[in-house]
Structure formats: structure tokens, C-alpha cells
Length: 233
Image (cartoon, rainbow, N blue to C red; front, side, top):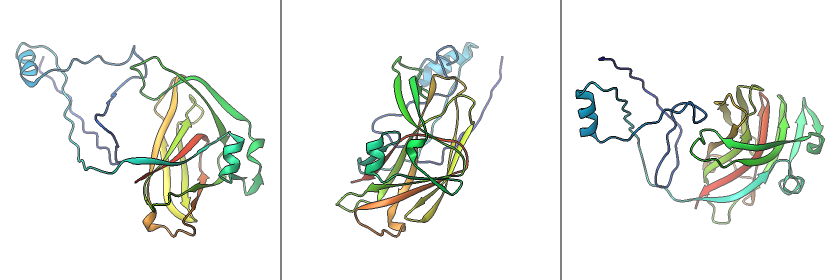
């Protein structure tokens, strides 16, 4: 049967890696993942000439070398001491609320999206923020003046509670745009997500050389576990 299906997927966000990237194109568990055998081009042509069904993927990427990301600071949501150290403040419907009044959630024996290649699970906890929440916290800056990097969010995307997450992001009062995070799982197991928000602090007015203030205005439910500031040093 001579048939072909062609599609084009273009990722506009930078993807950072050290040596390799693992692509998972479909499925959330081992029953639904297509098992593909890596073929050389001559093997591909040989199988195709014998009428065998073959799949091929062509990946094009634009790359540039960059400095190493270094962890500068991390706030663990749901950890009272960490929240105090980072001066976490919360407003819901413009009313100030103590973060401790929000019961923490516990995500037990869960995996990261796409982690179908091993059996390791995680247990995490955090806080569940409703829509129309204002979340403020501070993160310290490095003494060397590094200004380029990412804010990495670890979140819990529980099945069917909300399909997508979105919040407006501000640093030192300056709007940086929306942070839109699509949810890709329909299972309870694969519910941990890591997402990066690109930062260039050169374009932001720094009121202090010691820290920045981050603010989120949630437009949907927002289930936070931690935020990590990573800068190129």
C-alpha cells in the first residue's frame, strides 16, 4: 500500500539540553506508545522497497551554544519556611489571604508528563490557587549580575480539573505577558509538569541588585509546587 501522512510541528520556545533530547510523540503509558525501531537510511529504503510499512521522522533544529544554567534560588510552595524566606503574599479577589489558609495538596506516586521509559515515581506537595489570585514572592539575584535565564515552574496538573493553565506574569511591576501552559495528560499518574518562562532582566527596571519581585495574576486554577530561578552564569 502506497500511502503517506505528513505533518509539521514547529516549536517556537527554546529547548535546553546537554547531550540529547528525548521525543515522545504519542501516548501516556506503555500500552499506547508506538515502539519504533531506529533504522539507518539504507535499511529504511530496503524495507520500503519490499512493501513494508515504515515510519520516518525528520527533525530540524536551530542551535547555539550557551553558558550553563545555574540555580540561583528556589521557592517551595506549601513549605512554610520557604514561603516566609521569599516573602510570599497572596490576594484572592483583591482580599489579602494568608497562604497557610489554603490547604496544601499531596501528589503521591506520580510521574512527569511523558515519563514512560522508567517506573520511578515522585511524591510532591504544594498549594492550589484559584482563579483571580494575585501571588507575590521575591527571589534573590546572583552577585555576578547575571540577567538571562528562565523561571522554571513545577506544577501539578490533576486529571480533568482544568485542561489548561494561564496567568499573567510581572517582574518588579512590569508586565512580561501571559504564561500559558497546556495540559497534555488524561491520566492521574502523569500529572507533574515542568515549564520554563524565558527571562531577560536587562529589559526590566531592577529596583534592587539583591532580589526581584515576581507577581502572578491567575486566570485559571494554578497548582504550584515550586519555582526555580536559573540564570546563565
